[in-house]
Image (tube, rainbow over all chains, first blue to last red; front, top):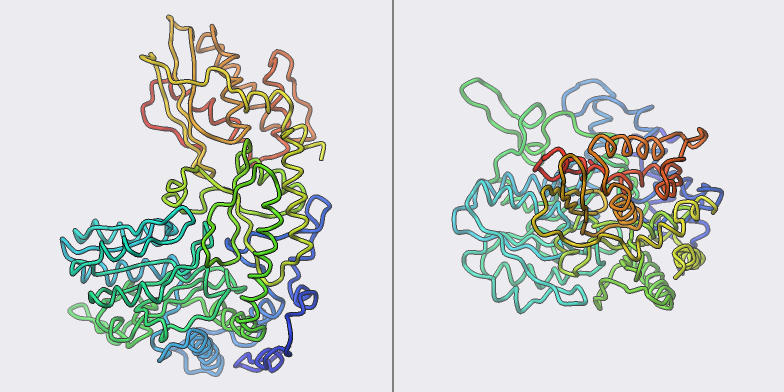
Length: 425
Length: 150
């Protein structure tokens, strides 16, 4: 077992060899993929919901608890120092992963949802005033809608929405039209979880900044699949979840620009986030600890650092290229099924394939392919306004990862043909 | 594989494709909305009472094959029945849907509704099959809050 407290692994910190990804070798890193479901090899195509975990990440969790477990930032003893070091080292990995200027701009949170709630609560309720406007898009995940509705209710601000065209692309002319001096926050998903659309966040941020609005990017579906550089994007906040990036559940990252985080009040109170507590007055810890009340998810943070090492080792560029090829192939193959319609046909798309079948409800599609060992998501994908925009109660969604193969696409197509057989279509 | 054909029996597919009593009712004596937040199934059940008996019943909404066929076949099986008879019938249907797969269930007297016996092999789909029944129950009890299966 690796006793190195920094949990570095030289095989992972060195880049993967040149050339295309070796998918068969990569699949060996993921024990969960090698299961049988109803007697058939698992085809896991629900990666937008959560990803499977490589052994490397699982081992790091085990190693952390075996070798370094202690509380952070408070003990003087050896293990506490080691735990603190591994925790802060994971933070610096996240900083480099997003290319943030400063590790104090990286806040550990439970996931994207908590990150957005933190900003909507702390920034939104403090700085939004009646008459101010928050701009969202018509295809946001509920977690980038509801926190802003709560902030709007508390502050008297109003929510405006950027509509999408029939392909699922944002209509930027409409965005331009609703942008104004009243716009104080623009919160937008980097990639739509329901449709796969890659939004032009760079341009959206630039336009928002012309009016002095603060921008938040929900990167839950983007960070695991493409290079993200927060300085280049110039976003004010960026959020993503560890479990969609091959890390554990219950851990995620909020990036925020230092000058904004400095002026925001704490989101939660407790230990860890204070400097000095008195009944008349309490002063808060410096960034990033001001936003990390209580004992953090240390093992999760360290494991997220390991997951970041893993995807960086493969290379985000190679991951994006391979997943794009899978999407292209899947799109072509499922399009051959008569009565099947793809929902979300943006020209810039991540490897998410949402579809409906004539005469079959998505729920029935899900049940039938499940019996073939194929895991897809069916439902509204926590994006009910997006579903409403397309006049659908639900869709079926296959979402891909670098560990998926062309053979698995064939299994999906065969599963969808079985759906037609069962429904006698 | 046989489980799937057991679940999606011909009669269920038929009622999914051509749901019976599938329309809005003007001036119903009772009405209730049902919602399955997990999958977005949503339906409204309308009832016309005559004394203690259901004289007419209809529904509208959207949902999967199981929920739609269940609603359709429910409307066919309860016309002319009293509240107590309907309550009894729902109890029998519920028992059939939730019985452990290795236990035998008595489906005689259930008529066409016995087609839903395959649902018990698919526990996550039980809610689809019971949505219409719960909604009907709420209408008969004059509860006005929309019911949800969660």
